Length: 165
Image (cartoon, rainbow, N blue to C red):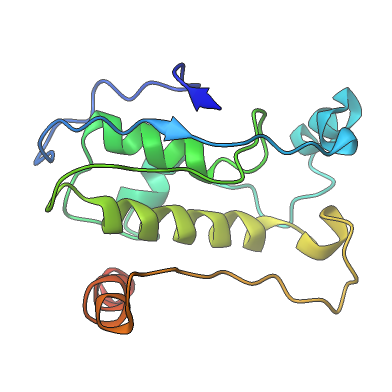
């Protein structure tokens, strides 16, 4: 399913932006009836599920107490990260596809999406309980790369550099 409209626009992000790229989101929506119910969306807005109130995306990316990135995402990159990492507001994406040229920030966006999702899960009182899992169960995060060298030399080295800074 093609997602042509987006939920939040980041037109003002400009400093040190990457070249303009079409960061189109393609994805399938979750078909979980419980997620679609109004009660679940209302529960998300209550303080009952949160151990910590999540900060907005730009504070998470650029705030001194968070990732403290010195580079700035372009408006389309920021919008792509926001919409794909937004796991609590409908529509829910189970996958996204980013097709752009070399040096356009695909790996960086992927890393930031993963970090944002891990952060949001950390803010919950019990992510397992929220998702209806056994409280002793694990929530896994994976990266899929074309080969081990790309995973190690591009993805994980970039992830390490972001987390060290």
